[in-house]
Length: 95
Image 1 (cartoon, one colour):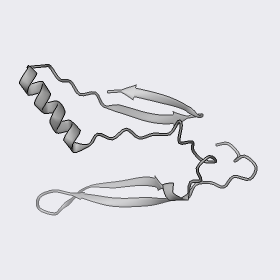
Image 2: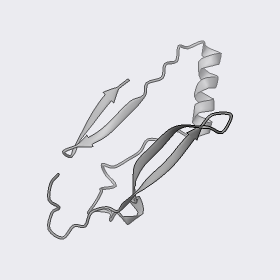
Image 3: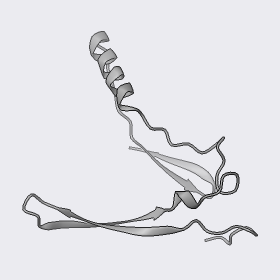
Image 4: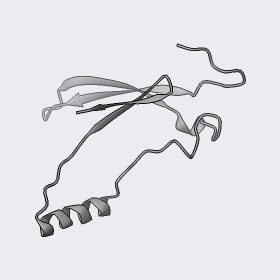
């Protein structure tokens, strides 16, 4: 843990709890995750529009890509990327 810079406030967050159930409604697993309140961030202070992004594919784009793959008989592969920011640097782990 590091001290916050002068004049900065921590980003608020909350815990979200969930229960995973099987088809008979029995609890199989408990989940908990810490969620940051992104709406409390201040542009230019907590993040920059130039370097912060979350790539998301539109459903229409996925359908178009799948159609092109099928018509052209291309090979298609999927790659999942887990990202984490450690000490201000983006560290990626490929699965």
